[in-house]
Amino acid sequence: MSENTVKRTESKREEEALLPPVNVHEDANGITLYADLPGVPKEKLDVRVEGDSLIIEGELGLAFPEGMEPSHVEVDIPRYRRVFTLSRELDSQKVAAEYQNGVLKLRIPKAEHAQPRKITVQVG
Image (cartoon, rainbow, N blue to C red; front, side, top):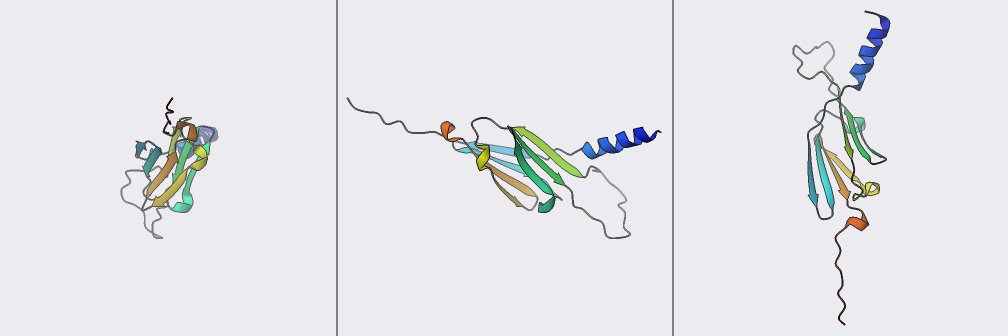
């Protein structure tokens, strides 16, 4: 195996990521997104908007005590990544995020032009 092959394999390994399960709830005023990110400490969580994309990334922070090695590993990818395209109806400037017990909650309100509004009817 050449050195280039090893570097490509390591690079590909660094790009691999688990897709966190996500639930999205929509109401008249916006959406609420819940993403399960077990094992990700808050300081290794990255949530950002780039253009019309919402990007969620997190690195697992599971450490084994010194001298211990796992005897069985089912998931060997150390990070999560999920990308969503945001509708123009959503106001990406007003995203609110909460993180508790491995669950990320994002609230993205609808833009003012997409909010429901009451129309006043004039008599006459």
